[in-house]
Image 1: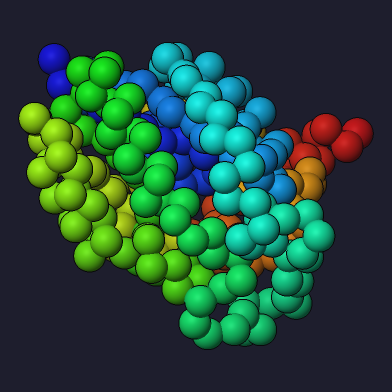
Image 2 (image 1 turned 90 degrees about the vertical axis):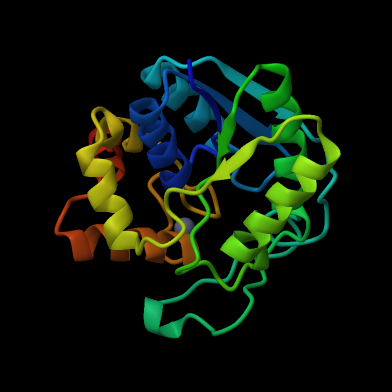
Length: 228
Ligand code: ZN
């Protein structure tokens, strides 16, 4: 029985990874981190999505370990607003949370080990990610090696989205049974707004993917229904 752990933030990419995992493994578990993030609503999203996907779900409380490092972990800092994707700055975005994926993968490896998972899955992508160094394949491979050298068995890190554009991620979601329905409950907005603010880096990238794929975002349709 192949078993995998998926890191589920409650956003678009991790939701897509969860449904990808359901088609590639006999057994899937989901793991969510509460790190007092600004968009804490995504934890509620993760709960709903794990339930829809019918997978066991664990939430680990990391406390305020990343406090003050980024607008995503410090409510005194504001999330940048942009009119369009053309306004996004080049280089590393201020929303980068240093150490986040390093720590998440260490803790996830521990849980994967305990639960007997061969693989763990994380929804990082080299494209479109504000220059985050911990979303690159070079980091992932080195992390996998570091974990393997510190454990008595290897846990592989799978990154199904690593080379996909946002459009391709939407197309992948469409091909996965139940995924679009789950995406209606995901939270992508860095502000955690419902309906999404539409002007943060994350909202703009999500819009780009759905627009380029020619698909309407199920989250927006749900928002319209909720607003009635
Ligand atoms: Zn937003």
